[in-house]
Length: 324
Image (cartoon, rainbow, N blue to C red; front, side, top):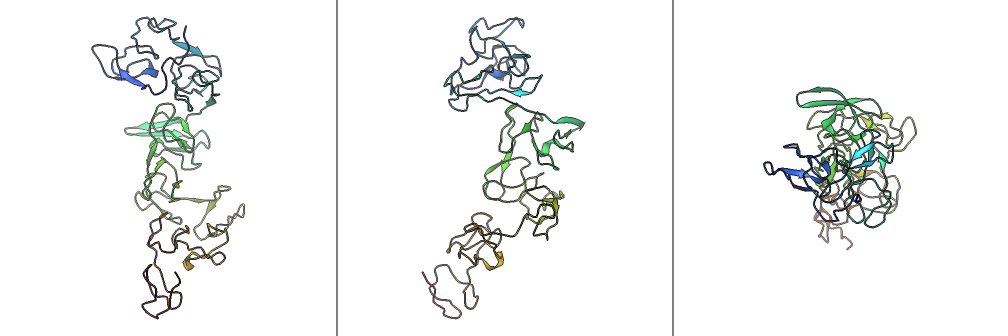
C-alpha cells in the first residue's frame, strides 16, 4: 500500500464529488461527500463501494493508519484523533506537500513534523442560535461564538470547539476562519483577542469594537470589561498605576528609551522623543495624526502654546523662530 502523501504541494484540497448525480464541492481529506454521503479515496477522490477495503483500488492509498499517540485506527486524512485528540499535520509547513497519515518527518522534504494533543471545550447548553461551552482551562461557561473564554482568554473555535493558540486565525481541525479586522488598523486578528497585535488597539472580546484602556463597558455592545494585570491576572481599577498583587508598574513609558513619561507633555523628558498623547506611541516631529491610534496631533509653540503648522518657520502668535 502506498504512503499518505501522493498529492503534491500546490494541489487543491477540494474537488467535485465523484457521484455523477451529485457534483457538489467535497474535501479530499474528509473521504465523504457532505451532500450525498458518497465515500471516496482521500488521496485521489476515486469513489469507494467497499467501506471495509484497506486501500484504494485506483491509487493504492491506505485508507486507515494507526495514531502514533494511542494506536487508535484513524481514517486517512483525518485531522484529529477521536480517541486522544492528537492533531495531525495535513500540509507540510515547509514544502506544502499534502499528508494523509502521521509520519514523523515530511515525506516531501524530510522536515520533522510536530504533533500535539489539542483539547476541546465541552458543550454546556444549547439554544436556537446559541451554544454555551465550558472552558477546559478555567471551567468558565461562555457563548462559543465570542471565540474566547472571558475569564482566562483561552481562544476556542466557534465551529468545532477546539482550543486555538493565540496567533491561530484558522482552526487546524475544521478550517473555521476565527478572525475579523481590527477597527483601527484593519489588520486581521483572532476572535476573542483583547488587543490588536499590530497597532495595540484595545478591543472588546465579544464584538471586536475599539475600546479605551480604562473603559468598563464596550461602547458598541455594552459588554462589561474587566481590567486585569498582564503579569499575574489580578483584577484592577482604572486609577491604579501599580498592580496590588505583583507590583507591576503601569505608568506610561517612552517607547524609545523606556523611561516614565507624562503623555500630556507630548514628549519624553529624557530622550526628547515626540509621543502621541493618546496612546504613547512614538511619532514623527511633523506627523499630524498618530499612525498607531489615529489621534490627531496638535503642534504647539513651546513659548506661547499656540497651535502651529508642521511647516511653519515662525509662531504666528509670538514670532518665536522654529528650528528645522
